[in-house]
Each structure stands twice: as structure tokens, then as C-alpha cells.
View 1 (cartoon, rainbow over the protein chains, first blue to last red):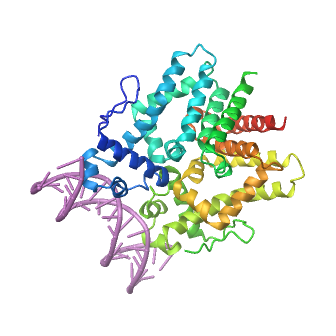
View 2: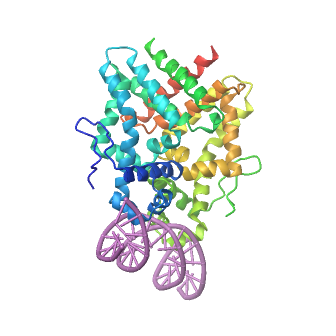
View 3: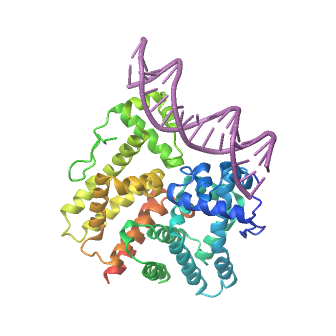
Length: 197
Length: 197
DNA sequence: GTCTATATGAAGATAGAC
DNA sequence: GTCTATCTTCATATAGAC
């Protein structure tokens, strides 16, 4: 039940998983990306790792524990960029830098993005699991900067969704990674800046 | 296996479902919105309708048939607005009108939006089921207007994702429907117009 | 159109040996 | 850390009566 891979006190996601656990997490993430959490069975995960279900259960007591670990690992990728943004929050370029990192990650790990943002099991986890909740709040706070009004929040909600959705959208499936990153950053910036005026 | 509720030749989704079938579809949509397709069992659907599983199977032979019908009904809500946009495609205001309808629908049916856009089962259906494919192509074509370049396509992909994602985003969960619609339309227009310049 | 009853398989999960 | 074997519950799906 307890997540022993821990996001520490202030919400910092760290690894702390064994090699065997990481193999399970990697397989799970890949399958979650393709089939969603509910569409992924422990048998599928075990097959992908190349072991039996019992071996998987030796690493994680429940399926939920695997989901928690997987989300933890993925959110952890944002930690460094988020800390940098929090540190330099007086710097007006800090948000744009964070945004760049978010886009970089979203494009690079696009197969998982949709699941992480929209899978109902994960959405529930993000909303109920305290450490995740805190992490998401930190992230949104950093992206919001000074403003907290309705328009600013909607703008951030739209940007986050636009980035997350665009990277897997069929309309731009033909674009290569580099182009997608560059254009996504440009259009995102454009949309953010029109608010400043 | 066959979808007898039919999107007709040119991709027009129509109802053609009995009252009993519509009860199943409504229950299914609601549950899909909460738990995703894979997270929703026929037992859950039957319970929600207030009948037994066997009664549900009498209306639809497979779970997939229910999913197809549900998607069909939801896409059908866009049909009128889409036809209007196609008819007035010389009119420069046609796209904005369509956009307004899309936003209206997205906000009004936000509980289903996430599932329809991101559930892996439905995404696969949308990509593989010909009638759905054609319908989505029509929709994208209408939203794109004249332009078909990479930037225009990315812009539409971002807008579509932004609208779909914002309506369920925790950051704006406190906004009432009217405000959300109004602001979403304003910001969406702003983002689209900056391309014209 | 709905029911009871049932078939068959796969799901999550555990026990205990190696 | 992994296995075989097993338990229980739930999944999709069908047969046949009312």
C-alpha cells in the first residue's frame, strides 16, 4: 500500500528502485502508453519483462504500486527543471526555460504523455495521492508565475493540454522530433506572450 | 462486428438506435467518462441501466459494438456544425463559427471529452474504423481551411488539444460553464488569429 | 426486452519450493 | 529473484425460458 520509492517531504520524486523493479516499471510504462492502465494486465507486464507474474508480484505487491512507481519515475524527470524554475523565479526567463524543458520531455516521451495526462486511473492517483498532488501544484505554480487569476489559469491549462495533446496528434504525426519541438516552443511562447500585452 | 448504427456513405453519423439501445449507450458513455473503456465492464453498464448483463447483450453483441455506438452518437453531435462549416467554407467566419460549436460541445459534455480524445481503445477505433476516420478528416479539413502546412496543422492540433484538455483541467475546475466557454473562445480565437498576421 | 443460469477464460493475488 | 501451482473473483459471452 505504501509507496516506498518515495517522493520526499517537499515532493521530490526520487528513484530508489532496484534494477528488477526498474525493468518492471519500464515495461509497465510502455504498455500503459499503448493500452492505458486498465488495459494493461500483470500478465502482459510479466511477458514483456520476460518473467512470470509471481516474479512481478515479488517486486510490487499490487498493480497499483506499479502504477504509483511508474508515475513517480516519469514525474521525476521534471524535477530538475522544476527546481531550477523555482530557484530563479525572479528571473523572467525562468518560466520559458521550464516550458522548454516540458516540451523537450513531452516530445521525447510522447508515447507515455497521453496516459500520464489522461488515463483515468492515473488522473485519480494524481488527484488523491498527496505527494503527486503537491508536485503538480508546484509545477502549476511555477508555470503561473505571479498571476493566479482565471485567465492566467486557463491559459496554463490550455498550454499544458496543447503541448501534451499535440505531441501525439495525428495531424502532426509526420513531423520529426526536432521540428515538432522547435515549432511547439515557438507557438507556445507566442500564446503565452500575448497575455503579457 | 458490423456497425449497423451506421455512419452513412459520406461519413454522416446518425442515430438509428432503439430506446433500449440508447439507454445502454448513455450509461456506457457516463461510465467511460469516469473509468475509461477498459475500466468499464458490462456488469457496470448493466447495473447503471438497471438490467442484467444478458439484456445488454441482447442490444449489442459485443462490448466493442457499444463503444462504436457511443462514439458514433457523440461524433453525431458535431455533424450539424460541421456541415454548416463545409457549406460556408468561402465565408471567413465559418471556421470561427465551427470553433464556437466545438467549444460549446466540449464544455457541455466535458465528462466524455477526455475519454473520446484520449482513451486508447477509442483512439484505435478512430484510427482504424473507416467511417470515423473520414469524419475526423472532414473535421480537421474544416478547421484547417485553406492552409495545410506544418504550422497550420500544429496550430489546429494544439487548439483541439487545448480545448479538449482545458475543459477538464483541475486548474480551471472552479470556473462555471458560461465563463469557461466565453474565455475559452476568446483565447482560442486569439491564438488562431495571431497566425493570420 | 428481460430474465436465470452457465460456460470459459483471464484478471489480481498468494503459497511455498528452488 | 524467479519459478510452479493454486485460489478467488471478475471478465466477456451464450443458451434458453418468460
